[in-house]
Structure formats: structure tokens, C-alpha cells
Amino acid sequence: NAGVMQNPRHLVRRRGQEARLRCSPMKGHSHVYWYRQLPEEGLKFMVYLQKENIIDESGMPKERFSAEFPKEGPSILRIQQVVRGDSAAYFCASSPRRQETQYFGPGTRLLVL
Amino acid sequence: EDKVVQSPLSLVVHEGDTVTLNCSYEVTNFRSLLWYKQEKKAPTFLFMLTSSGIEKKSGRLSSILDKKELSSILNITATQTGDSAIYLCAGGWGSQGNLIFGKGTKLSVKP
Image 1 (tube, helix red, strand yellow):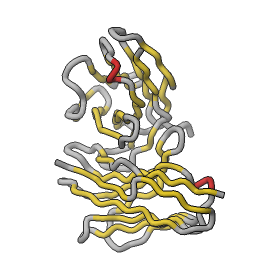
Image 2 (cartoon, each protein chain N blue to C red):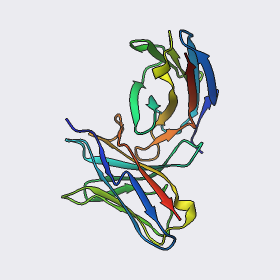
Image 3 (cartoon, chains in turn red, cyan):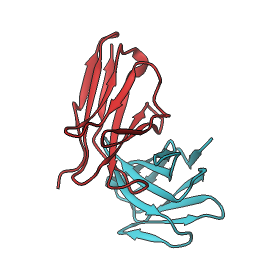
């Protein structure tokens, strides 16, 4: 029973490049959440998706960031024209239904040079 | 604005000690309080508390919610070095279903 999968685990990008982070939820889970964690900070909510729909993107910067969860395949968090301030750990979580326990993946650590 | 505050931010104890971690919350659509343990990687789920005054227990860990005081505690008895981690508290639910996290308590257990 595989848990939440994320890849890559580590990603290095130069300023101005694009970063694509992938998340496969647990089997049977159709709700996906993305969180960002900065050093010494808690997890900050970014976006909540259900298959093919963005439910809440209130925590995601309006510029350069986008997310999708297609009918087939993983959820993708895309950051265009990365800047140094985007360096962080990005965690994905999934749940079977809304307002139920969320299970986290191992995270993608993004480093922008 | 929704917020969750944890205390202390860090704690150093010796093996065998008992620790209590605190969490207070102000969450508009509050229904549940969740605790996670984070080591080097994924936060792993510990407890979800929905009812006030009912203790949940798992081995040496236990937790309870006080809705009147808008708070929760996580107790760890007979601590072991493997308990060293960051313990995260989260209030559910945000506007549509997200969790609101505190900054965490970093627990270090010395042999």
C-alpha cells in the first residue's frame, strides 16, 4: 500500500528556470494539497485540488506558480522563472475526502542557485 | 486570520523523561486538531482529535483536546532517542479543507 509519492526528492535550478514538482496521492485518494516549508517555519498551505479541479489556491502566489491535477497522472506544481526565495521544501498531502486526515509525501527540496 | 501556536519551540530532555507539548489554535472553521511527527522527511500522522476531553493514546504517546481553552497537548512518556523530531500541530480546517500548521516543537532526547 504505497504512500504519497513525490519526485524528484531534490531539485536544483538556476534563477529564471522552471521547476516541476510531481505528486502521486495514496491509492483511493482524490484530494491533493500542496504545502511549502521554509527553514524554521511550519508548513504553509498553497493549493488544494481534487481531480481536474482547483478547489482553493488562496495560499499560492498569483505570479509564476500554477498547479494541476489531471484526470490521469500525478498532480504537478509548476514554478516558472524561479527566484532564490523559492528555495524551500514542498510537501504534497492527500486525503480520501475533504476534511479528513491528510497523509504527506517525503517532499521535494528545491534549491535555486 | 487563522493561526496555530506551539510551545515550547524547542526542548531538550534525557531518555526516560516525560514531556508535554502545547498547541493553541484560532481557526475559524475549526473541527479537528491534528498532530504530526516530522523527522528528516515526511510528516507522519499521529493523532486527529475532534471531541473535547477524550484522550487518544498510541503506545507512549497520548493527546487530548480542550475546545473550551482552544488548545491541545501531546504527552510522551519514557522518552527515547527515537522520539527526537519536530512535532507539528495543525488546526483543521481552513477555508476549503486545508490544515493550518504551527511552527512545530523541536524535541531532542539525549541518551
